[in-house]
Length: 387
Ligand SMILES: Cc1ncc(COP(=O)(O)O)c(C=O)c1O
Image (cartoon, rainbow, N blue to C red):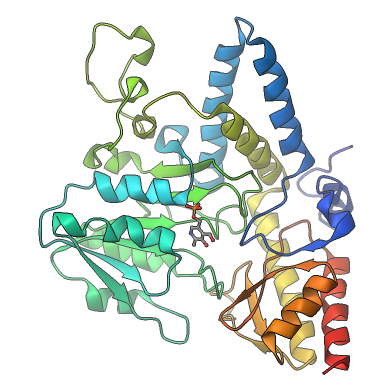
């Protein structure tokens, strides 16, 4: 396939759709759940498997070099350096590394948001035995602001941890305001980025984010089991790695004599050998995302959700998602009539989506196009005719 350049807005969609054979059978709008992988990712996995059949002498060095490239690619996507990226299995693991790595004292607290996905709650709850209190900021009409967070912060608050994009409603938090609030008070600012990175432009520097974790299987278009943890260089030394191994230390390839001088970069959180299959797959997915370009991806996703919202409203639907320009995301949640029936009608029509908050959650990616929007709206028309 001849690949379109990143600026070929008008005509590129069809060519990129070739990367997603899932388009032929269904309208995949569940990127907030689990995404189909592009052909290029499948090819990377096949190549690695073929190489592993032989493990020739040079292969390990090439795989290691690729691991470093993939760190850099994830870093580019979020405005960080390769040295600030560690590979993790998933978001939960990344957030747990942060939660368990902080130097807590009994009586400290962490501030979270109500109704978050449990991946950003249980790592913090797990600290109860160390005397750490978890505080939940209530939402107001699915939203929260930095002022709501400030109301629960006190001098014992050590961490604020939020999802940039809410898993059910798609509400996009104002990270920059929360980041500067935390920075001014010396509070560690941690972000669950799985519902935003890969879909929306994320800049860890601009939002003063200290740590961010994102699993690969949603908007990053990679298989499950590999994701990234960003740890800003300024806070690496503040976090104690909770798993140690031969790769945690400087000059790890020398093995002996033993020493426990921890690597100065985020890879100190990885402990041992990398999950090469997962990292290579994630690398191929990141290549696709970077070629299309984060700005264009965000524009296309927001344009698609806007078209869907428009068409749905004209058909009498209620948009559940907060829908202001700065608070909407790749997730569109709507209600129309009886939800279980609506969901079944969409499923029967080949629309892959999920039921959330008593509505239906649609989550299109950059390669979904107007024909997909039409198919969703036609399925809704069909459902309405039967009401
Ligand atoms: C906000 C959020 N965080 C995390 C996850 C998944 O966590 P993990 O990557 O640990 O499987 C999801 C999945 O739905 C999610 O919506």
